Image 1 (tube, rainbow, N blue to C red):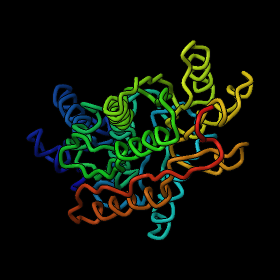
Image 2: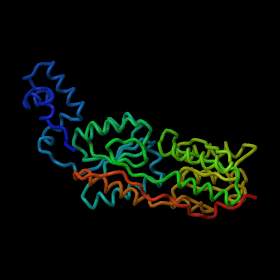
Image 3: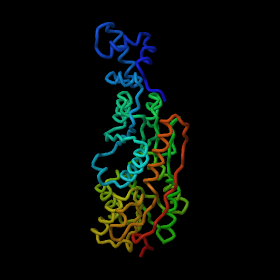
Image 4: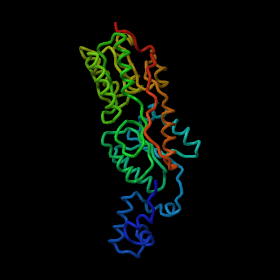
Length: 336
């Protein structure tokens, strides 16, 4: 994975390295047309003119980037990301690598962050989360030849390695468990609909419900407690309200539990609740929440190991991590 250098720009522009230096540093010695052509090439290949000296030296940044396209307020209450980051840090710190984190509002801004980080030599690679269909980040990362590992999938990531968990298998287990308890009206509060893993879960939920003769009801949400509460109320005020709800994260599940209790429903007598991705939150509430459990810290550590191997120039491939398994607790029981 070769970083763009002044020599690369000079070769593409058909000029000397000195001319590139003059153009990027705003010094006389090149025509305005040549200057603009050189600057355009530098931007295209992800080279930042302020980092010319570091580019020439080929120094390593000893840092890995993580850009999250989520509301910043979610990170303070989202155990999944905290567990993931702790896994990153366990591996990175052992190799004296730092983790550079930035929160952005859109995938387009995320792409700009990658270009800037790589051009300014702030990072040696990136961990990419929240894979989407036709993800605009993937071709940019490949064009920049920026070492990367994608968490989530499986999806189209070209030559970029990805690590994922079998979400379809996990949700199938959860639905079968609830049906075995006697539930026939099962709903789901999902995460962001545009994310590939959300779509995978939705298809699997629809498939298993269809095969068991159940109606598949999914209400989209955004992983926050506020939206999780709203989605739960929508489901529980229905005349054919569900007797069980599966939530795509623990924060929404805890919020859903509070809504059920606010409405005078007993959990698990009137409503069973299952949370995706176990965390301490699931054990701190009453009743404790049945959850789909996996080792999130190890998931993050595995991704970090794959990325460090890629940065070292080793060949890395796609990896399927362990499937989440059901951990029954007090929030699930046969319906009344």
